[in-house]
Length: 353
Ligand SMILES: C=CC1=C(C)c2cc3[nH]c(cc4nc(cc5[nH]c(cc1n2)c(C)c5CCC(=O)O)C(CCC(=O)O)=C4C)c(C)c3C=C
Ligand SMILES: [Fe+2]
Ligand SMILES: [Fe+2]
Image (cartoon, rainbow, N blue to C red; front, side, top):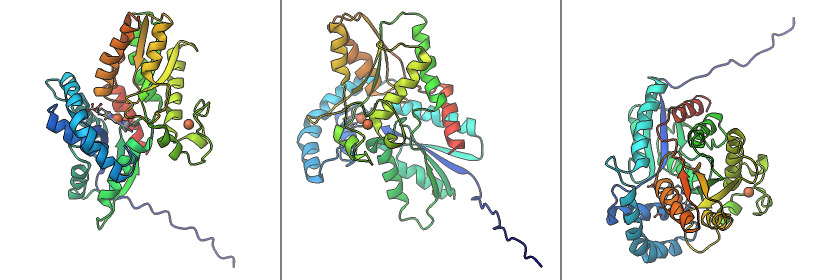
């Protein structure tokens, strides 16, 4: 008699109860006062994934330059950014937390956390532990993967759970720059401005990174050479932040119908004297002014909420630079903030994670 073919039993043991969703943005000071901004910058910039130099040099830099000189300068700019609701990054974070909870329903518990300052990642994870949740999805609010942003959130989460008796099942969202709803969100915002003004040029300005962080992240050690290596996005450079940014622009201009030559991808917010990824946004603005370009619509698609880097740097400082270079009309496209399409993007990312 032929023996029956034994099939392994299909058993999928799901944790009882709800799934914890930890949404994580970068963080912001508790207030725009110099001591709070100093405390924030200290925690942020002491992160070895953000300023990736040896600990002794990093400590000297923070104590010798950042804390005494940068903090008072930054505090002035944070005062400009601050609204009656506080820092927009945190304000929109809490609205998204509430809206996402509503959209996901009772099978999920959504918590907002900040990588630096408050509410902390630790507080969010401890709440999941208290509720006995053993299925967690971590969603860093960074469309393009970088070690300094997404990577740092992963490291912090792992560092916290590593000593727990029961380490929960954790899924991480790695990146989502090409998610159709994320792209559609910025397309809709852009179209709103394009419907009422005929812009001569479009800028896609992303947060910058030191070039060495891109080189270190190149797993092949040969793809990212800062030539044309980021022009296409493929399996070999999928974690290259710069390639992901160029790919974001490619998807946006395709859907917005912006022709070749009428747009530029560039990188802002550089700090220090080491080379950062190019082209630099301020150089691009000066060149546009010199060419006689009079109107620009500026997107900031490495951020999902308005913050210092969008509202002030792109919305105010780059506007002034453009005008001093001869430009007449500069318009920032606001971020996704609490836009329903951003909530839909998150639901989709979480349900397919
Ligand atoms: C070495 C320095 C920095 C790296 C690397 C870096 C990467 C990086 N940052 C963001 C997102 C944000 N950064 C923001 C502010 C900010 N960033 C740096 C430095 C680096 N960032 C500084 C010093 C500051 C503080 C502001 C200042 O003093 O100029 C913000 C805004 C926060 C807010 O409160 O509004 C965001 C958001 C990403 C995504 C990233 C890597 C890709
Ligand atoms: Fe930054
Ligand atoms: Fe690259």
